[in-house]
Image (cartoon, rainbow, N blue to C red; front, side):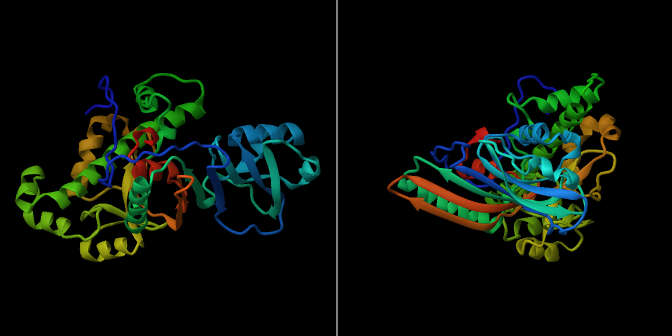
Length: 372
């Protein structure tokens, strides 16, 4: 289906099959807490000051504006590893020139605190983080729904989850990708930063569509016989059998692009049995393309056929985007959950590698499309 088709709102498929779970979630400072985990220890010397901040109901850009006004440091001279949600209580690291440390010695703000200072050699840049730890409290959870949540959470902890891009990429009306396509088609935009963001939303939409196709494939492999699958997918029955017999839910495909997890180089899946075991052990993960000129290509085969079904209508725009790969499937770490029956509160904690969304975990657990 063409992205430009009118009245089309794509809805990614869920991996889990339970029915919708009723729960109340609000992104406030008591029920949603995010802690950024740095990529490395700070050196203790250098020309840059690292600030660990705690902000309440402020976006990262708003926090930077406040610090800039107090310190006199230009916003462009601050560094950060990632943007954090506005709603909730969030901890993250920023960098600024160490020579300006004296300007923040008496800093005070009702929504923003500096809780730690470090010295480091380099300015923080986007991506310089390991990931984020989350605390989420769900309210109005019945005892029956709590049992369903426990089982679903355990399954995600064991199997991993579909690493969709979340609603943050697509805008209030879920049409950022359409604006990105219009830019690729020649529409002019003065704001280059926004232009690049909208083009990335277009790439993200194609990625989500490919991932949803793979989730559908994995469901079909569980639900249908080889004979039935051969009528759906025009590939050899022996290849279908190799896919179907994999023990894990999300099925790997020969000749697709894999990558060491949680980071590492991309490579082609050649020995399917060997790579399946490494995937089960959470040592590797399959990747999907962020469509563009320099993306690591699948070799000819079933996976490439599925990619081409998604990408071929937009080949004319491929040279306008750099392209890369992103994990299709990701894993939670350091998981924990509790249920307070008297308060009807279900609390969960987990760590996600950078590039994965906590809202996707919520979406999969609750089967609520609001977070997609």
